[in-house]
Image (cartoon, one colour):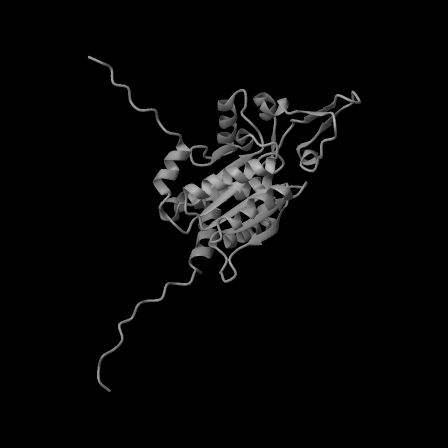
Length: 282
């Protein structure tokens, strides 16, 4: 008797896309990793074959770096999982992610809302240890997928990230896309997808060197009311920047998510009722 093998299991990302692709009204929340969620130790090594000179660049410096003739870019440190595990968290963006993760998990069956992490990196030498590291930060890696944009294959990080987001939009019916990144080049590239998805609202938030999150750009149809995701983020920022909240060691994402939901969804306009005209005689 032949052994019948079970078909290979599809990835969690594909399963979520298939399960929730028909839902509408949700938001895709995108978080860069390096210098947004985490302050990492990895450096980009630039060696010039013409001059023999070598220099190290941080991820922030590399975001605006333009290679010269003879420059060879060495990104090998970005595949080093042991080096990655030495990263330190950046509080404000991580608090936002954890709160949006909680809200999205509560709403995914209603509107398909999702959170993803989108790094410029390629694969790590030990993926499992990296995922365990994220779990230690209370990030649900079964729902919050860790997308490595360099796997796309373009030389441009912004084009790689744009391609990843485009694929998500093709597979789902998101009403809004909200991106948190320290590179305005990446933010602009993702927001430029508005030309391909004109019915989708795009919100971009820039993360500064000190970890502060600031509104960068909004692109939406001419006549629109801002999506609930925008109101949620602005309220999260207000809450976590409150002096009392900043005085404690960490934010309670579940409690904060409940407060945000109460504020955002109870203030949403109720749909108009379809009333049957009265046929009584005067």
